Image (tube, rainbow, N blue to C red; front, top):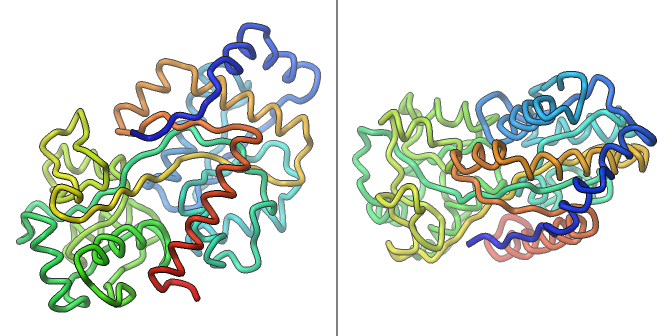
Length: 329
């Protein structure tokens, strides 16, 4: 299971004492709030922004509806640069983040970027990665696909909704490494600007497989358009017991992707406290938790100092892993 790190007592105290409303009334009030999804519509970052916008407004945490903007490019680098260079003091801006965000910082894909360039606000969930194929694919198992990759790494195109070196790229590399591929950088990874575009690539037949997160695939799985031949979880998912894990097929790989938000580092302390309280209130809402569960996203909550230390650890882990598999020197 994914470890749940939320300090439930702290959240309960904030709600019970009205600390959140005090911050809102006395320190800061959001005006024309804005969430940037650093990808095209249909992917995980888009899900983060649109779900957050809905629940913060529905719960009355913000008075104005939140604008959501899709800003794709550079695997999130365009949005990252926009925030750090043009909106570093914007108190009303939050940005969708995930494992891919910390991975790109770790690998130097966001040129010159470090963790402190932005203020990492919170995580509120995590989900497992998966490898999918179209409904008519010749591949019935992950083993069949890996056998072809071992014979010719360029024979199987694997789509992902983010750039080379991203977590979508790393996941199949780890599986191929466990399968015995010596040079996993030879894997044929096809980058798209978001999970929606990557899914289109799979369904159009331009690639043979898709690497992504389970929530991005769920609707297409339920409609019968795709089949998932491997979930990167330690055991089969409770609500989807027919989907085999990569581990049970001989590839001991677990790939969990956290979901969260960051905001400009130069925003006021009052704004940072407001948005932290806002997300803490949101994660306590039963409706929000039901939305996460429906998308097969497990609770995984970090705020404040816990969030800072979690991201620092994530960056360090990705840097170490990226060196091991040859993405960076």
